[in-house]
Image (tube, rainbow, N blue to C red; front, side, top):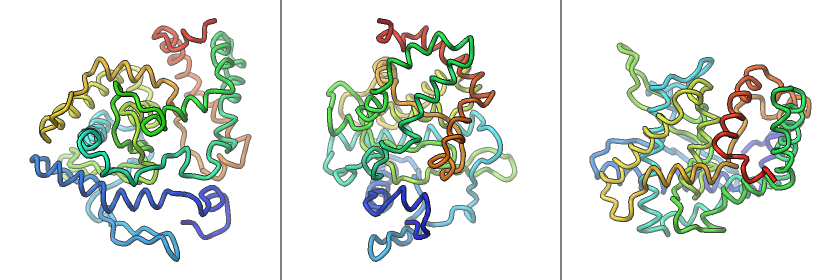
Amino acid sequence: MPEEEGVKKEFLGEESKIFQTEIAMYTKVLPKFEKILQESGEDTILSAKCLYHSLTPRKVIVLEDLLPLGFEVVRYRDFSQDELQAALSKLAKWHAVSYKILQEEPETLDELRYDITNTIPNFLEQDFVTDGLTNFINMLDSIDSLKKYKKYFEKMQGNLVQHWVNIIQEYRANFQSANYYVLCHGDFHRKNMMFKNNKATGEIEACMLIDFQLSYLGPMTNDIIYAIYMLFEAEHRKDKQDELIYFYFKVLEETLNKIEFQGKMPNLLEYRRQLFQNKYNAMHKEYVDFGDLSVNPKKRTELYYKKDYQEEIKILLPRMLHLGYFEELEN
């Protein structure tokens, strides 16, 4: 927990539950998941080792250093499709184990009672949450080819954030028997994964996920929708999105069979229906200094006027229109 006075300390606050969540993940949940996978013949390591943790007198977690083991974060370049598949494969195996546990012994995950909407005090009142849609609408109004979409987003004002909260909290607040639920990573983007490559061939040998402080029980779709906008590159969203989702789902199915899941298997058609159903769960992909983002309105506004962002919006909004995303907002 930050001790230096400033935005991060103020933002997290003493009431934050992120340390409770991450300690539970490293010491109880992930080791159990790994054991289930390894007993099925899957030699899968899901996380670094937790070397030390404490909640009092200070909130502290000390983790194994992955750099000496050959793992690195991808920086200053786009992800390759191989890297995306390695990350999605790891996520699919995690989701498969948690899907089994939630149906067979859900009490195992009772400690995970928080999510981003309630683990960080006043998160939903932060300016970067509340003014995002207004900034987006103003950007649409400034571009002739996008003005026609403005009416749909104006109708979302006042309830968009609540739609998102409802999706995040659905497992505990509004359980739907037909929906697929898992333990979500909660922050599945490029900075929260590390890769180990073969030094001779350059091929990926392993992918390691990191940072589990926002993990929560929720719809199986949530991490994938988050990944589409926070992990995939523009070219993957344009040409490879369906292929990558299919790849993820096939690994999920294969893993459920390996770990001898006895319940009703998820199917791809229903999964895609739930992807559409949870369409309000999306993010703005941009990496900026958190301090600037939270306290500088100008910085937040500028994000929407980046040329590459606007060019992709010109592709995404027509696609969403044709898929029926705005149909309920027509009248």
